[in-house]
Image (cartoon, rainbow, N blue to C red):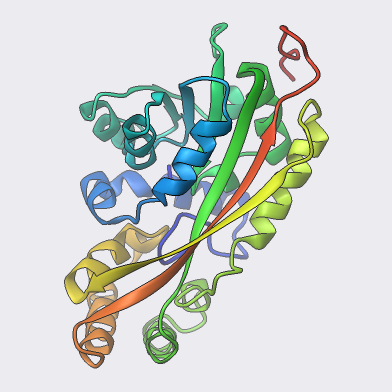
Amino acid sequence: MPSAPQGSQPPPDLDDERAREVAQSFGTDAERYDRARPRYPDVMVQHIMDVSPGPDVLDVGIGTGILARQFAAHGGRVSGVDPDERMAGVARRHGFEVEIARFEEWDPAGRRFDAVVAGQAWHWVDAAAGASKAAEVLRPDGRLAVFWNTFEPPPALGRAFTEVYERVLPGSPFARAAAPGLDAYDALGDRAVEGMREAGGFGEPERWHFEWEHTYTRESWLDQVPTNGGMHQLPAGTLAELLDGLGLAIDAVGGRFMMHYATKVVIAELEGYGETAPPAP
């Protein structure tokens, strides 16, 4: 399951129905999504595995399996839940079992996991209901870990990106997300913390922060732009104009650039239930 650009945060000011449409848009070109979307820091994945009581991982919003492959590479036995059959099909081709459902409505059929994780997806889940479902399926001392990538281009390029979005899509929320900065997902982290506290059963959530960089070429950056939420609904000519403008901005800095990323994690330990998980909400 996976912000316009680079992520899957719904643009601000969307009503629930429109947000659902955006959430369901990522499978429009699932192969491109799998190819173009950024990965996550391996050190983060290893830390989550290190603090979890075992290797069984449930990936909420598994999408095409980008995150699942990283957890599998670190010894995880990963299963997934996702509402989009098109995205799940790619993950299955990578060898993962995926069930089609919204996480809050998913039937675990008695299965339990050592970690429940969600990369760039938890904002599509009701924070309290999702945390309650996670508590239901976690083993004692299991971890719920939800996280988001956010990014900050070099300042001059960030201004150029914003100018392109504002020119091609005036008044659009996409323009505000062209260069969001490293604190862009802090409010989503706050919501996740509140949901974990409301659900009960978890220790006090912790926040982890990982910074990293990735070099993009003109082609690799433009490849991922159409995968962002709502982009598939743009007229073809508008999207082409947007990509042309962004491409020219990248050409002006030499055809490649270093993107500064931060991955923001909220993680909590299930505690206080002994050997019995809490009842489903």
